Image 1 (spheres, helix red, strand yellow):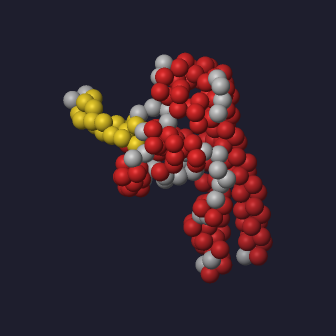
Image 2 (cartoon, rainbow, N blue to C red):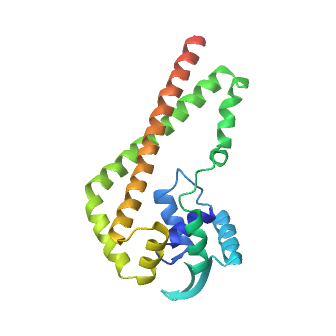
Length: 208
């Protein structure tokens, strides 16, 4: 969660609610949007000096806006591009499937049908998102490049971490990998659907 928050703040200063909204809309399959876990991560980042906080007034309401610091940029530069720790990708919820054989046959069938329905719903949602991304991608890259160029500190941070010479290339690289993540989600769900449908077919055959 700490690195997700740093990644978000790399592009602009944000309140915790802005970060949460972004996670809900774009990273719901990757990490939790729990305010508690986000607050814990923010506290750790503040203690390490990787982010700073500014109190701003918006619509007569005081809000805390967080920004990445130079120390945060330095840390992020070391962290960016490091290999994924496969041990941290484990999903404890899958333990339910591992022990599903303990449940009665009708409950196993209900479990599989419900899970398949949920996966199909998530797959359709990602398809809609991908269709929208495909149609607006070029415009989005141009708009984000223009916005980033208006912030000299942001340009400097992105060029430093990426090692690129042009901000246009950085924005394109970022967009590419966000699209790859979406494609990964679709491929993973498709594979899961094939697997769980196969298991459901076996259950229905065995429980006739």
